[in-house]
Image 1 (cartoon, one colour):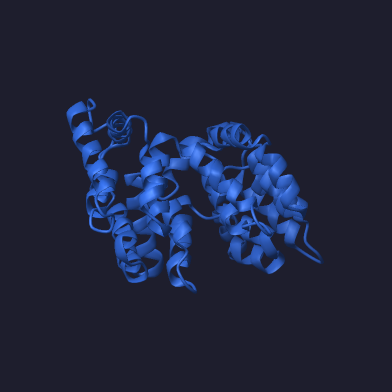
Image 2: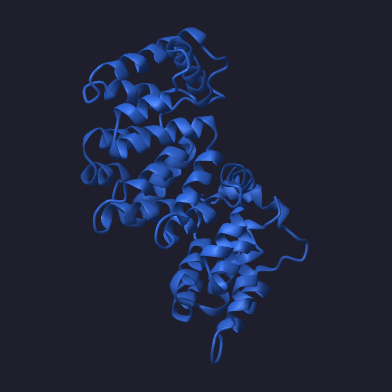
Length: 327
């Protein structure tokens, strides 16, 4: 169920000679005996799509009575292990695991919550909630409520409902409604933010992407060129600001958002490897080509060059294999 979307994206990798059982045997041989053949593992995981990897994992369990992820964890370590495991999890279950780690670990990782909750479609949010419930016997909304607070908490709950209108549902864009919503956003910004975020939530979380884009245009007409992003940056702070900006950035174009997030992974001391892994894995079969183009545009270097400079070993080689998969 949770990998249905990826099935349609997998056709570019499908070959007439794909045999999940034979590939599973190749992985077993790579981990059998003394030492581990990481190159073979990298070759398998870096040259099959998610749907195929799930087939391989199932074939592995049927043939050898062992869980492929468990065996990889026994044989590998560090970021290479983390990346390999991520590639063997169904997409929406992977989202659910990341959200669970974000709210149930030490502290709360609002950045992860913002990224996943703001960038997934209604359908994907519903699948994430089902996966979360099945895996943790707990409602995602309850965990979000328990670990977030204030208007950021309300934003997460609003997004968790998955009630945004879809572009297919909106047969035509409503100019009057867009102007009305733009005025609401303007009034909220001119008022004391802290009492008007409820209005902001309603506009940002309910409108279809197309309708919201029109609202953003109307806002700029009303303000003489000031963007909603500029108003949010000025009037909001912390996690709430990042959440609102992510929604706006997402409807303008998700590749730009993810290009910025990837650049953040390389900024400062060290590399934010968990974020880097999550973004590459979750976007690799959706819009990574567009993200790469935007990254090059925005930062004057390619994503592959950034990974080459920041990462190392088999971890780096597998990331580059994913980045260079055919579009």
